[in-house]
Image (cartoon, rainbow, N blue to C red; front, top):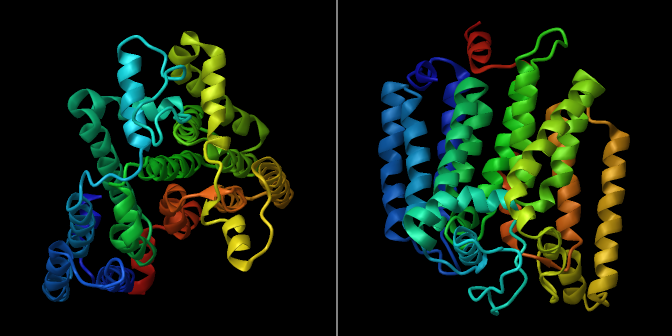
Length: 403
């Protein structure tokens, strides 16, 4: 990767990718926040630095210039408002971890940090493990810092894809993730969807990596199993990512056969069992009830979904029970259609998984924008993943441009 970072823009791929990435970043930053479209000091600093960065890139033709600016800018925007809060999700996660460390059952506990107190808490086990180090080191601020670290991990993964696969596809994805206002805000709003997005992208990257390690359809079993563990981490952080991981397995099935797909799913299942075991042993019924409570955690109609649209249009809105039934049936129908499509690659499996998950979210009565941050990194990276799986690399693209 170091050689790629120090590469010079003597090929069209790097030059085009750098200008697309830099352009996307500065235009999104200039779009401002809220209604007044006025800059914060951090956003103004990044806009003032942009001409200097552009000049340096033109003078040096070094890839490290746009990479450092985009990654540094994305991190600066997130650190500028660290700890702003808003959602009660991570506060409940911190309380759950405290209960667990004191010997209690976080799935039986009555929470005081939720809004209102005593609300259902459906944090799956991987989320608790993921945020445990931050909770031990810094309490709630440490838990929130985990989301900032997760955003940095996404920036690093997108940068890696740009350096290894395609500057033209990777740098615009990096620039957009770094600057998009709602994605920046969600890093600090108290939700866990930034870390969910990081693990979803990791799951897709790990599976493409496992497939690319094989030649002539001969599998590397350990690579497939590691990819399965990565898939388990995504599902164990947000239950709604189950269909996406299943469709990644379908793509693997088409590429490497049934045995390999089952190995992937078995590794994911074993990882979930191991990570869940300490909580299940404390109370299996409470654990199942807690994990399932995410489906009915909100009784009101809110957010980005068909029921809010129906309200806005003056159309009737179903009660929670029937609306949930519609959501389940629509999601299962979308899943069946995706299976009938039979994705022929991991990237197409990821695309099918994104579509099914969107049906799940858009047909629910309560869909905060934060949920879409769990899909955003994968959506941005999808073209690069497709190119990677097809065997395209930045080096190959550079050589093609040179000829």
